[in-house]
Length: 263
Ligand code: ADP
Ligand code: MG
Image (cartoon, rainbow, N blue to C red; front, side, top):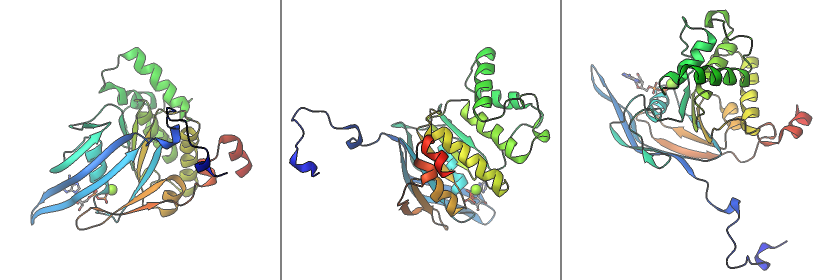
């Protein structure tokens, strides 16, 4: 069927898939250096990237190329020395509501229980105790941690600890999820399970997340999870390549019913 022979009526609205996806994040000409004994080390020089609604984007690069620095800038944890970061069309000036981050080594508070760790994600937002508890329990349930609410991180396996890291990020109902090598501290099977669980939540639209930026050293993981992959150069960091993953991986993009056939 040739669509050109059936022109749309003049006043018809554009079909949904023809409108450009909303821009969630735009990183423009971002620069960041760190003071070192031997002078300033320029880590990011003119880093540029955009994330659109519905996208999972990978960020690859050698150790020291500035991936974590770029993620911290987007999370509002550190400031760029140049350039601009726009989140939902507005310049970012610090930690923004709706931007959550998952860390490689989990970054849990060892003296707090699972529930308290997850609630801590909401404290900075000024959410009251009752709502904090309610939302934390929901996030814990969603990520498969029910029954472990009162455990301490030291009592959990690495995979379960990272689930706490995910719950603490998801509890804020993020629009943008940043992940800094979230699976690299886990053994391969645990990593696979957690990746698949996360993609299931994403595919089943159980998360309010509109876009994910994931730093990884694992090219297979990037191809498996991402729609696009950005490559950050070293010395100094700028995005040097953008790779469109040329196919939708069956386990990544099929609806849950079909997933069962694939598994
Ligand atoms: P990647 O995550 O790609 O491995 P990072 O962003 O962690 O790279 O680090 C890039 C470079 O910036 C490294 O050389 C690191 O030593 C330096 N760096 C990162 N954070 C700081 C900091 N807070 N103070 C000084 N140097 C830093
Ligand atoms: Mg890093």
